[in-house]
View 1 (cartoon, rainbow, N blue to C red):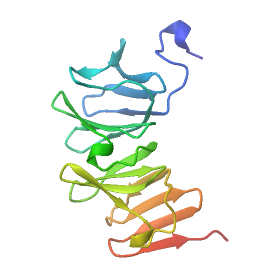
View 2 (view 1 turned 135 degrees about the vertical axis):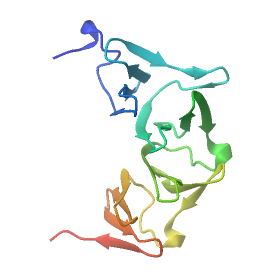
View 3 (view 1 turned 45 degrees about the vertical axis):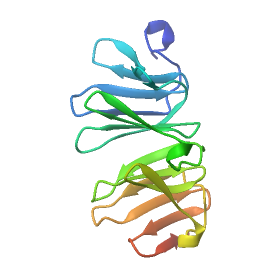
View 4 (view 1 turned 180 degrees about the vertical axis):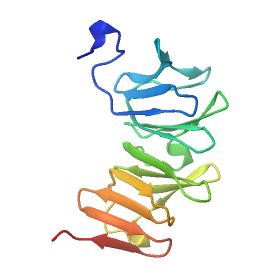
Length: 171
């Protein structure tokens, strides 16, 4: 077992993934780290836009952008070495971000403790119970090969085909 005494930057990681260049990104309660195969480096960002704190979700887009969801509700997008920060001023509810995915039109969607959100331009739109969702807390999401959105929540599994939400029940 390898721990902080052997060079790991933290003992717990909430998410990890490889980017298109083969670097390993690790999200933890103490921040975001990048491993190039030799060394771990804490990633802060640039100047006024910095990633500090509890990283909860990571996603690499097909174009190579890294999306970073924070436990306290912010989202960052790393594009060509520059960070863009999204917060309550951009429509986020300020609740934990658990998962991030892109649809076929490259729109970002996030599963949060405050509901399902979609990025429209530079503003996040809440997709809530008024749109047919029977829950406002989602822990995971992904798009299938047909473009349908699947959502996991403490109240069940949901599928959105672009028009309606369907809940799946166990046997």
